[in-house]
Amino acid sequence: MMKWLRALTALVLLVSGAAVFAEGRPPVLTGIDVLVRDGFAALQGRRVGLVTNHTGVDRRGRTTARLLHEAPGVDLVALFSPEHGLHGLLDVATIADGEDAETGIRVYSLYGETRRPLPAMLEGVDTLVFDIQDIGTRFYTYISTLGLAMEAAAEHGLRFVVLDRPNPIGGDRVAGPVADPGRESFTAFHRLPVRHGMTVGELARLFRAGRVPQLDLEIVALERWRRADAFDATGLRWTNPSPNMRSLTQAFLYPGIGLLETTNLSVGRGTDTPFELFGAPWLDGVAFAATLNGLELPGVAFVPIEFTPDASKFAGERCGGVNVIVTDRARFEPVRTGVEIALALQRSYRGTWDLEAYDRLLVHAATLAAIRDGRPFAEIRADWQDALNAFRDRRAAVLLYD
Image (cartoon, rainbow, N blue to C red; front, top):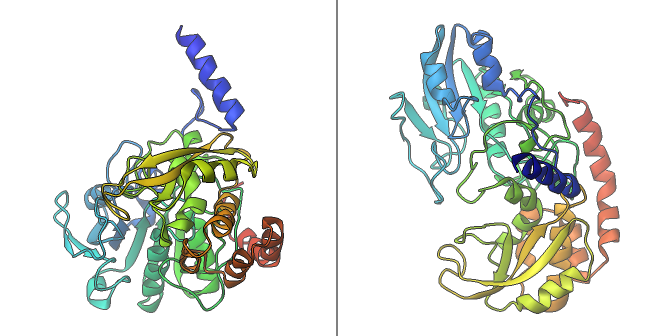
């Protein structure tokens, strides 16, 4: 019976296009795993400030903070936490400084009065280390924290070390518009496409090349990770990177569905399945799901639902909505799906759906105008290509993995 179940599971995953970790394949080693194996050689004699959260763990589940605190020859001086805090549990506008109960070390919040390390926070530090799991989307703020910490390190002559981690939605695809120049923000730190196809270590190399060429940067690279690998092919344990990012499926959906959340739609915050659905009290889920299914988008299907969020947007209100189901991950195009949904919303709910707010995460005025005008997606995507090709050239120079 067990052999039959394993065979059936393998068949389902093959049909869906999912590459999964197989028995007998050595698991991926993250940067912290490599650092531990090599006796913390990259940090010997260093006074370290660690930028991390609950995703900074080795393959045995030990926190990077604890490992560096106990490592011979390493002096862990300070901790720095990103959005959602050191333990990844907070979904609030600002987070205060604190103390890590595991190590007794001061934790400076980089999501409070400041979003970059200040001089007083860096006192006694000669090396900043970054160990946080990203999810592969431009507007996920952990990579902005990476960039701002790099700038602070460069300003103060500090060494910067990235303990690399996989891009959980794979590193072989880039998609979406490159952010407009001059519109950098905490959700658009650098001129990246929506889906960047890079690890945090590779992003650090890109940021250094474009912003802080003087930075003393070292990447403790992954071992055994391949560009096309999604997280379920790594053999690593999934840890929810943030309170509303609770599965690999949600990570794959986020580059498209996440774009909608600045508009007057719920994207499922306050439900059990954020980013797997969207809706509003004014949306007819039955009709809109039929509209979306009629587009025959690759690798995805849409099911009408009703839901009532218990928090966040429309808390306590009954919403008509759509459940977004990835049917073939190999064919699924999350950014295309998100923009096609926006086009359909503009056609069906012009004047009700808040199109202008869509640009807050999209950060691409030409695409917003094209959606306003109802242009076909093929034309919209064609307008992205010159900037995407230029990005691919910049990206190719800093990639670390095949």
